Length: 570
Image (cartoon, rainbow, N blue to C red; front, top):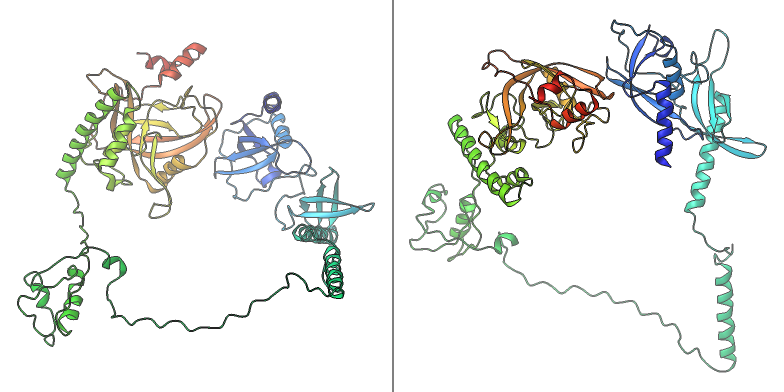
């Protein structure tokens, strides 16, 4: 049933021209401008809950990246107007969007009053009917007209109320909900006696007990099991605790092994003791803590009478990691490459062609042999990986710190970690999985992430959203930060790559601009224009990511292959 309902709704949308990514010209009466161009971002069922069925259209405005929800009937009316689309940019607008009402598009407003969306309760012929405030019309002082509020009731009827009537209807709704809440929370008990506070059953039981007790008394018999209340327990003082010598050790330290020091081991600390402390006798054996607490323990030991043993555990001093030099990082990258190749070859044979890359990534992470992990979030070049460096899969990139996402194409720093609260990308991989990419080598239009059927057809099946990696690339535009670009060369021979796949690092690219448009599969996608920075090593010949073979096969089968599809067949 769900499939049939959605299928019929899709047929109706196709007949009216409403598809994801369709351009819509919004009339001037909506936002008070000459015209406004938007794209259909999503189509979903109505969620107002007023008893009416229908659909809502989410419109996306690319000039200020805002969205607004409109009724499907209203958008369909705009599409049927067949007004030619302008070729010039639209005038800028504010972010507060005020949708129009189906009652009167010129005067009724959906926002601007606190009563919008509140529930009301009206009584008709003695029957209470609930409703909701849908929109309102401001008062016209010149015409001496009061403000009106459009109400949609749960039974489908509609009416307009003035402000006084609306206030009374909202108060009635609140009072009714409070009464309903108190009835729900009140316990379902039997009828109570107003005098004793007992139910009818409890009163009857008490009368029976008294009658039985009177009969036993008249027969000279006492109740078999009289109620006896226990005597209150006498307050007793706590047993005094045995005084113990105060200890300066915590239970955690006292339960650990002790460490012994001789006089020579304490010589450096003895020189710092005040002159008033008696000298330590030669040959005295002490059990003292680590140097962090040694001074305090020596004072306690030598100011007491006789020999005092202090038992504690030696606290390990933290070892501060020294930063690696440039040469050490280069050597670490070389060692990690060799280790990755060794483990990948092992797991490839052990899993018989399984995900040896993930197995290798997990093992190297457990070993602690991954490098440049302290440079995550750093843009620009990395040590030991110059322009033209080759990689065999994304897991190897993550092990070396070049690109730390083994599945996603955009490696970024989220806003929660970024110092200024703005997310940004550090590296991107053009893997040939998006048909909407336009790659010219020194520059390319890079398609954002999301909405791609990665596990099957590799085609765009849903619209993309300005989140995660897409939002991070927008942050690169604002911060003017470059990204490291890696391109997928394709499947190569085993002599060229031990994984039969090859990626090449082509240097730093600036994120210049972005746009939101309809792609080849009629889905809205984000596209980012990347331009290679000057002053780098000359780019290799034919530097363009090879299109995924699955996309090539589908386009060839459907007769829609372009020059890019045919180039991937070479």
